[in-house]
Amino acid sequence: MGRLNGKTVLITGGTSGIGLASVYRFKAEGANVAVTGRNQEALDKIAADTGGTVLTIRADAANLKETQAALNKTVETFGKIDVLFLNAGIALFAPVEQTPLEMFDNTMNINFRGPFYTVQAALPQLNDGASILFTTSVVNEMGMPNGGVYSASKAALRSLVRTLSVELAPRKIRVNAVSPGPINTPIFGKTGLSEEQLDEFGKQILSNVPLGRMGESDEIANVALFLASDEASFVTGSEYTADGGMLQ
Ligand SMILES: NC(=O)c1ccc[n+]([C@@H]2O[C@H](COP(=O)([O-])OP(=O)(O)OC[C@H]3O[C@@H](n4cnc5c(N)ncnc54)[C@H](OP(=O)(O)O)[C@@H]3O)[C@@H](O)[C@H]2O)c1
Image 1 (cartoon, rainbow, N blue to C red):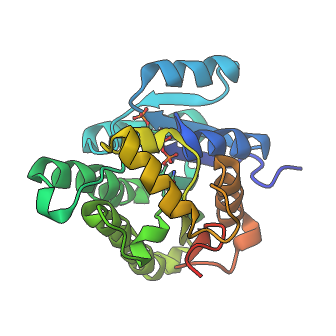
Image 2 (image 1 turned 90 degrees about the vertical axis):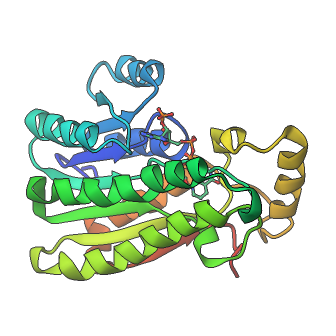
Image 3 (image 1 turned 60 degrees about the vertical axis):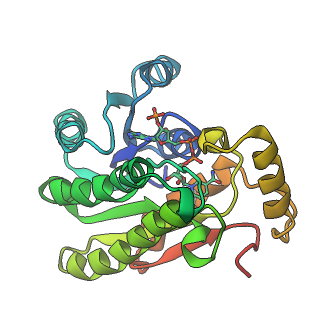
């Protein structure tokens, strides 16, 4: 018996890294999984690899019409949603002094505004007792150079978890976040940093991780699975850190 047997799950940003690992992990636990992303090729690969049993939907997390359509399609296909995992995110790094307005808007639109209004749109489509999950980051609790907008977008999500956990408690909807430390995913290649800067950044990060390594996407999917499942039935408003001890 799977830990999510028969549950309807929608994962945003599941074409790569943590989201992709979660698609397979949640499916293995018996869930009916729908996944969004912008990369059609990656979506097609998920559909092919799962014999079409995972519902793949092309949707930009910053585009409210597209996320509304993704919610509708998920409910039409699998029924009302039990787990909404808002994982889509980008990490663009620059010192505050050199952060263009476009980077600010793009980051906030994808990482915060999109998830905020996706939750709003999802409320009528969620079962009572559902679970909402966000992917935040340890950097919402620490000062990281170049992280001005990215870290703030995750701090905003952390705050939203607190608010929603109280607002949705009457419907027994639990709201939590998984907060990864450095995880080995393609995200680092998209940060806007040069190879040299990335190398330096990687060394600096690893020197602050007591376990001495990057985490893997599966290790975050495992925490997300726990928070999404009934095993976490008394957990709401929380942020669970998985960072190899970095914040300590
Ligand atoms: N890796 C880390 O060290 C780390 C640490 C802390 C937090 N996180 C957070 O973990 C989450 C997943 O990141 P990851 O490391 O797994 O990175 P990743 O491999 O780059 O995956 C990011 C996912 O988000 C999707 N995405 C990005 N922008 C999107 C948009 N506008 N609309 C829809 N989907 C979008 C991407 O899909 P498409 O390309 O198909 O659009 C992809 O599936 C992010 O929220 C990130 O901030 C990561």
